Length: 202
Image (cartoon, rainbow, N blue to C red; front, side):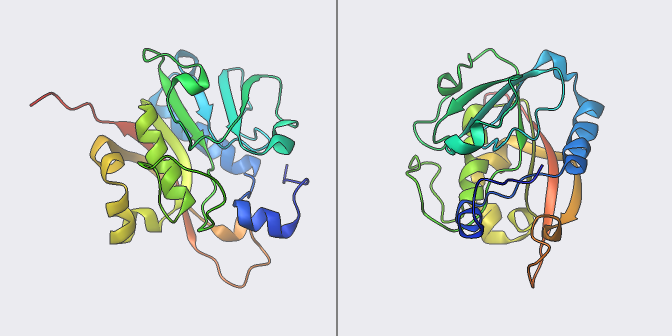
């Protein structure tokens, strides 16, 4: 279901491009090859309408957009919050022992609309979200982001802690045309599955 409560300008400014079901299904196909999801809590920290909440699993959804959260399935525990401010597991009622998967399609744009923790701050909101995942220490991350985060040197360098602690284990490249068919230009988006690399103390 595409989003219906924001106008075109709001959609662009917020980076609120909702995820078609076939892409959600690809995410689950990737995840379920590597992990038994019933053993995990699944967090979408920019969940919009909760498009990723399609199974009988332990879901947590968060979004800054109260209007979007009104459309989220009752299957998820919901937090109306800025997920990039005062970030901690406790913010989402997670303990340090909870096994966590982060799933979703975070916004990515260069608008500075909301306050962001200093360690997460970046001119690209999507990179701020990627940095936030490392802080939450999930075992697996399955999200969409521009391919340029991995192949553009400055973007990759901006994800220093993230890239030091996670490795890419699966992925699918799709076109941004899926989200903005009327645009005059498109770019590649990577639906990625990353898992944590636990480092032994040195």
